[in-house]
Amino acid sequence: MKHRKDYFSNSMTVRKEPFVMYVDMNSYFASCEQQRHPELRGKPLGVLTYDSPNAAVIAASIEAKRYGVKTGMRLRECRELCPQMLTVTTHPAWYRRIHVDFMDILRSYCDDVIPKSIDEAVANFHSYHLVYNDLTAVAKQIKADLAAKYDYLKCSIGIAPNSFLAKVGTELQKPDGLIVITEDNIDAYLSTLKLTDLPGIAAANERRLQLIGIRTPVEMRHSSAALLRKAFGGVVGEYWHRRLNFAEVDMYSRAENKTMSATRTLSRQQSSDPQKLESMLISLCTRLEQRMVKSNLFCREVYFSIRYRDRTKWETTVKLADPLQDAMELRNYIKERIADFEKSRGVSTLFTDKTTNLNVAIQSFIKGDVMQYSLFDNRIKRDTVRRVMYQIKDRYDKNIVRKGSELFNPHVMKDAIGFGSVKDMIVTDGKVKNQYLLEEDEGDGKYLVTDAENKRKPEYQEETYEYQDLWMPPDVEGVDE
Ligand SMILES: [Mg+2]
Image: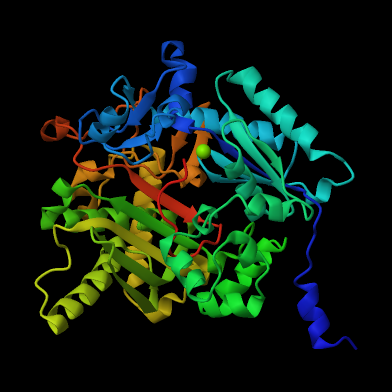
């Protein structure tokens, strides 16, 4: 009989051959614009969701980055660094079209391709080791295929034994990179990086590591699993040890481990109105509701956080006795927790004008099919009504049926490019659509607003909306451009 320990090590089987490929498009939205408008090529360019000095640049061209322009900067700030920077507003339909072609190219080489965001994907070639003996040749061919279709688009490709290290490979050389990380060169590559250069290590995790004396990625890789467990307070440290030592922990996860999250980042002006913060919370919950209905899932855990300008954070996790799907119920649980806290601490409101970010995440899903309706008596009717409503939206027009919560502030539901929302994309009649949007973007990228009053510029910044398969520590920050 096998000893228990053997089973344990079997589950930790590590394949050290570099057979995972991560592809990251460089300066994606900006390059897409330059692809379509040759007159913008070779010039510093910023992509905006709306044209205003207060707008945040959601993508900067390679040329603009050379002036220090970064994703997320206000247009005003960018102009100080690069006065001649050109700007263009987003064209989501075009970015999605290219995404679909980009996935088709990858899938022509490998069946096991998982899109990680609109401009990133990971391909697992481990079962192709008899087909390809040199993945760098495949990577070069992928770049050539992409160039044949879109001559201005470039990508960085990382090849490594697991998806995490392959992603690190894409960070090492930009633009147009091609890096292979192996057992022999990994420490040399890691020694060029800071802890916070590793995807998933932001300030909070960096502090945790520094507290126990780990200051560099190389030191981190050579730390014991036990030490890393201590740094991260549990199994998360174990995962870090494994991913830095070639095991795969990020590519796949079981449905019950998945997290869906919806996030909004706010400008000073937006956070000054508590009513707006309230309506944003509803819009985030509605997004998640839509996702659950489409996936036929109910959640049993809700997480909510508010981040403030001074980098502090208020957060709460609600474990639900009854799985739920309804946006307003979701919101009510969150509001209850907020009210409890405000009352117990004598705080007038947590939605202060110092708010910079709202995040709602849900997890611990169960399938709708296995829901024990008898336990939730009058719910069966409501759940059916909700499902039918979304079916009508799908068949006819997304704006025909609206829920009360959507009407609360209809234009907050405008199309969000959603750096992580590629799973929502479907192709119908050759048109790429985001099936979870309530309003179609018009194809020329202008957001459709629902009534005359909303014709003024959108009040909200872009929303990032992710469905995470990739396990990430809780302090992942920002958008990976
Ligand atoms: Mg990118």
